[in-house]
Length: 418
Image 1 (cartoon, rainbow, N blue to C red):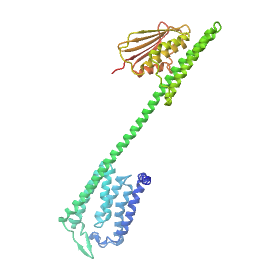
Image 2 (image 1 turned 45 degrees about the horizontal axis):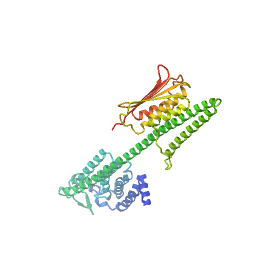
Image 3 (image 1 turned 135 degrees about the vertical axis):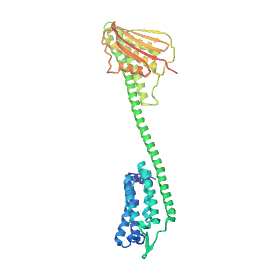
Image 4 (image 1 turned 30 degrees about the horizontal axis):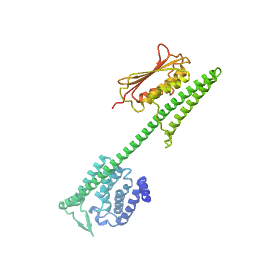
């Protein structure tokens, strides 16, 4: 089977050579059998022409009929034009019948299959006109062309108009049949090309979707890593700084501080392992639930252990169902905002986390009264990540310095719509 597949592939890759391997041997065979055997079938006015001239005409007609078949797939219009030229020579100077006349209907079929529509129609009309002219020339126009043939000097007169119809109708039917076959092939070819183009388009779209999904996943992973690492490191740094000074007065505080640092590090390491385990898609990956609003108390307690003053206020009652992942977004926003307070607002800053449940959704606001940097870090993963997370759930996000001092981060997410 592979052998035949290779042959088909080679056949399609080298169309001219493939067609030449078929038509050129046939052309040689026809030349050997036709030269010298058509003398008695030429028009009467060519009775005294030398044999070499008659053989030249036969060779010219055979070559013009058959040789263009080698370019019929790459240039079907030029191939048909050469066949028409050979047919005109045959009509005026050629013998009654030549085996190469079958190339006329094959060319009509090839035009209908591969050529533009205008060339297909032109080829059909030309072939039909040629059929009518051939029938008329052999039966109805003895005075125009002269008697068509002779045998041993005796002129064979044309048969007359009575035989024109039986000659022309089968030829016309044959032309129309081959043209119809070519149109069926054209329809199949266009359908196949359309399917191939559609398949290629779907392949390109699938590749683009994979690339977009990969880029989105990379951004999501970058946000998760930033939230985990930045928050945990900030807590550990604050604890280490505080424990270093407190250890001089109270060694027990230093021990508790080291315990907090170790616990924070272990928690960050566990989250990293869970994230990397899911990315590796292993069966042993720990897929414990991501943090949500129920874990805010623990988050605030961790920040308080680092020395930050944090207050939590919650108002209202849930008025709808949150979308999957929405609670994680709110948790990460609060986590990142508190981490920024610890990093930029100063040691004496007080942060307030307000969680409001409304009829349309839930909002979180993180305020601080610090006097540190008020940059929004638009080039990093901090506030940019918050904004992107909020946008994924059709929420609104704002962040910036307050007029009275300090900084505010506010995000609101709508309830899930059914």
